[in-house]
Amino acid sequence: MRKVFHEGLCTRAQMIQGGFERAYLKFGEMHEESNRIYIEMTTTQDKVSSLVDWINKHPEWSYDYPVPDLTVLAIKDGSRPYVEWALSAVEDGKKIKLTEE
Image (tube, rainbow, N blue to C red; front, side, top):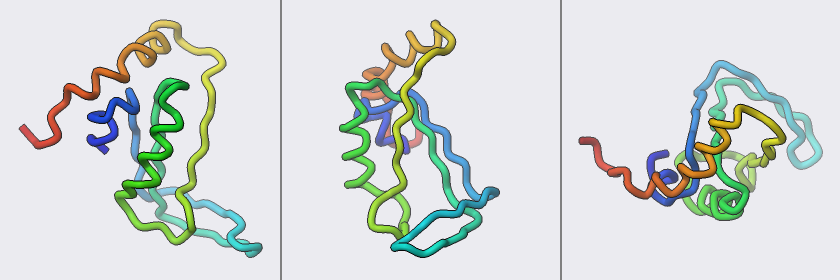
């Protein structure tokens, strides 16, 4: 996940591994799964397309569906200091080191 920050594509990423179930339609049939990985990221509106493109080109895990499950939720309201930080911090990710220190 560190590479997404280095590319300046998000300000926050949270990964939840396992522990939840999901149900969905796949090629017209109902499927249910457990122990899935869920990632939530925060970015700015102008970076959404680039982030989606990057995730599609650099999957870090395999998935059994033709495309990753990606959705975008716009921020309608929230903590003003947090939103201002998110808007200004995206570019700061380019400064991180990709190797462990």
